[in-house]
Image 1 (cartoon, rainbow, N blue to C red):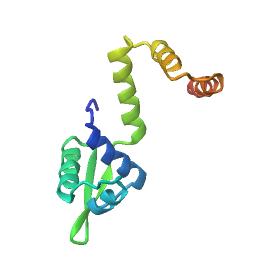
Image 2 (cartoon, rainbow, N blue to C red):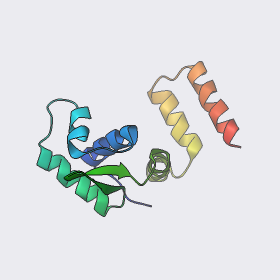
Image 3 (spheres, rainbow, N blue to C red):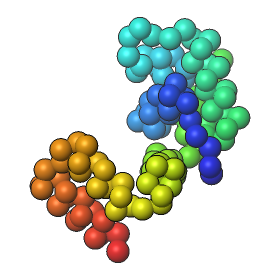
Image 4 (tube, helix red, strand yellow):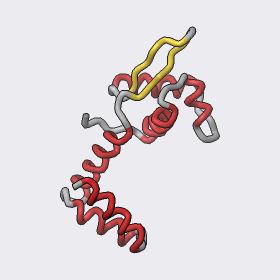
Length: 120
């Protein structure tokens, strides 16, 4: 998978990842105001199906939509793209940037290091 989502698509995916499955109306209910039109959300979900992020199953007279790409997989792919595009593929450079720019404190950095060490 090497597909990127637009901001609107990612917003819909965040809702689907949290609900696991939902109708278009249920997705709209979880979106912040001002609520987008039903047809707008329906179109974005169909685009997500085309990009193979979402699938559907019949439910009554409509459909329930559900993610077929998990959030962790997409996040990992997006972070690698960010790291490769802006930090020459260097995890160290990326973390250093976030520490500098976001005024990260020692406790936050220690928590990140613990997570990294768990993966080893």
